Length: 46
Image (cartoon, rainbow, N blue to C red; front, side, top):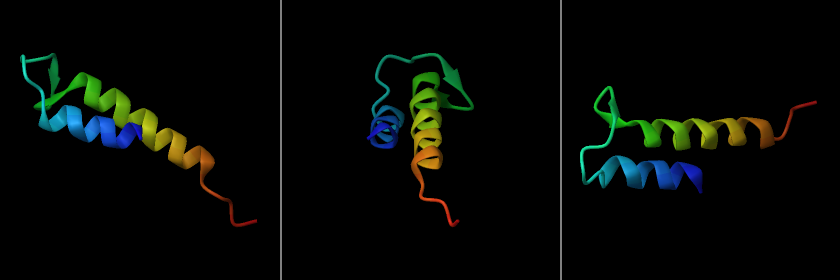
């Protein structure tokens, strides 16, 4: 869900938000949190 929100923010940044490498910082934050949650919840191969 957070990755979807990050993708939407990347596509719909309307009012020139704070940018990092031409992507809004909020997109980086939500995308990073989404990837972190995926990594933590991924089933292990033990």
